[in-house]
Length: 314
Image 1 (cartoon, one colour):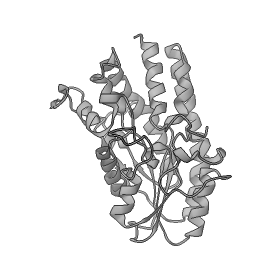
Image 2 (tube, rainbow, N blue to C red):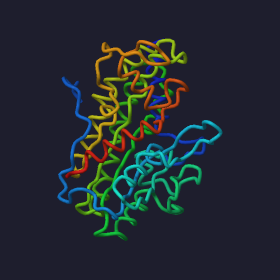
Image 3 (tube, rainbow, N blue to C red):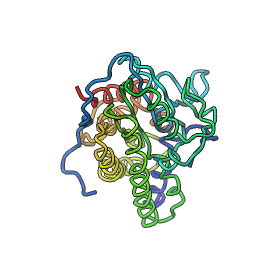
Image 4 (spheres, helix red, strand yellow):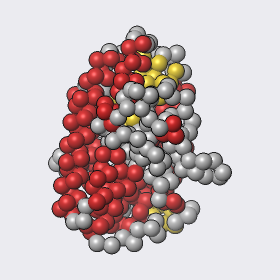
């Protein structure tokens, strides 16, 4: 596998990171030290108030999508981090997320295919995801305890068609710029509707670390190494900057799932033997290593939920 094809494949899979089923709708300088997993919001509201309303916005990470397994079909799951956060905080969850959503789709895509909706989601027919979120926030003014947003992975889908490293790099840079532009439109609207309620933005695990052990990728170790700066220095840096502008908390899920640990530190995985510690962690927390599916396992969602709660000001 050549480096251009490798990079294009990475971008394609990163896009799949937040895609649901086939009917999904919608359309910085290098770091010198690993970023922290969480940054608290500077909002003045404090911790979520038990019994309050929690609004979840985003893509298939927010819906809790998981692949088919053990006779259970693919689709949204109550194991998703949003459901865990709601249960641990005794909040009433209103999950308006849609598997396959892009950052532009939050404010432009109308509706969400039934198979891509979260469990017990309100009917989004005729409304954008942003409209649905704002409506919920305004209807529950004074009772909103938390808003989470996870979006951006699907914006990289067009980069899968790149045939050279230069094309892929240009496409990725443009996609990140587009994500920033759309968040710059969406987040202030959410902040206005949410008032002083905590808003927490999320990133994604670096699932491509799992390519280290996957037979699907002949040059998997190169892919794993290449993925680290893509997440750390490009996507996550851009996302953090936008959430900071609206006084939102930030969860670097890549950091929370061990993605910035040195690849030179090894451990013994029960399935793959001696591997770098970040690789073993991704094999535990996502479905990538054994089936090249980029969604979190129940254990992965538990880690994300804990990181979200740690990012809420106390």
